Image (cartoon, rainbow over all chains, first blue to last red):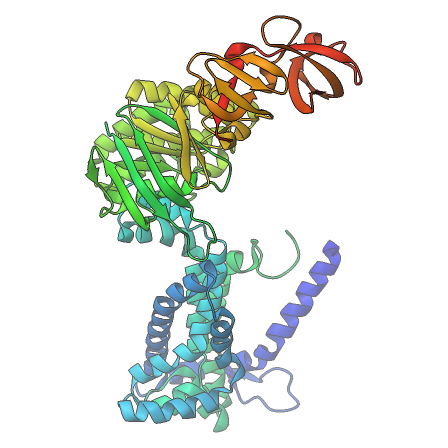
Length: 265
Length: 345
């Protein structure tokens, strides 16, 4: 692709990705914005002040969304790294079936999964609790982690571990000094994916959390449904934040080069 | 240092048809450098991994100085295995790589720095301590791998094809380095190779391994010139096998009666001699043959000749090979010292 074509494509992508977000951003700082005005008549920070006012639900939701996403991605990594290692390094009977089963949550609608799990969690006493929400967030996050990590392990030379053992390293030392440094970039990428997927969960949080566990997506849907465009705008901006930060941080790892978007190399 | 004893080792990889180790027994003396020679797939790397503790054998014993080590995990064995690829840790620089084993033992920082510097000096890489593995040449990587093992002062050093990843001109250099370091340190060393020449140069003794077990152990020359059986002779490029009978120092066969060297095995068997041992001309054990084919192979020319229904192959230098043209009768001398009998073949 020529440089010019690449720049053009980059611009198209930027416009396509950012344009839909513009109204949300504007709503969060607008006072009275009616058709046919192109831009709001008056600007204000009132929606933001309101969002972070003492009685607002938003700060609490921000904290719980973050904590749940952190816990879910940590748990997904803890389970997904060994699973990815098994899938990436070894060939075994029924491997294809395991891979298919791991893809299942991507195919089966979240609402169906959520309702099924709700029954089980109800009996286990895990509904309406943050723990239950963290656990159910494994359904969408774990496949991401496993697929990223199995790719990482497919390129990993386990002989390095045998070499380390022969040089006198105990199994835990091998894990810490040889395996983890080698797969660290993959862990970062998988962890960030898991974080973002958990961060934006709605259906599963709602079904298992039962409205008691309040996260940003829940508030966003509620405010949007109630026609509070200003609060929905603020929430949308807050929801976007970690994605943008993470994208900026790991663009290099994700795309294999320095620039996240655009053409010049 | 450490004396290594392998006793009747058996191992079959899961799903494999043939056993990787089949009654493998071997003894490496304290301070000896033994070359374990064999074609690829003969089980020699498997044997190294069993000694290092990375695989458990199905049966048999591995003893260091007479004491079984089978219950010990690799990190607690006196042996260090240097992998064929070198296996440097990509995320560490040369110094960190060489110091890896000492760090795992939680040695004091100062001691580690000192011993690493010493080891790097041994392999002549003093200046490259800060480099990353990908910034090194193949030969340098192999030397770092060697230093990383030597720095631990192991009782037993296991080298898996240490020269196979190197260019031809680097091999000689590395071979000399390994030989010198082994003599200086006196570490009992088992080096695995598929290259006959390498085995002969590196090993005090050479053990030839075929199909999971040792066929013959001895000096390089003994294996070349006094093979124990047909497979050993074939492995070393033997191509002349003459059926007949050996008794009282002579061998009766279709080519006539040939004088044998002392202590040649007696009875029915096969006479063998290396193709490069044949000389043109008259003398003891001279035979008449008709040239069938000549093939130029660089330094040497391979001449196939036939007589009394037997085929012999000779490798000769250009001067000696001159004049041998297909269809011509020639006289070849089969030097007595170059003959050997494989009994019962």
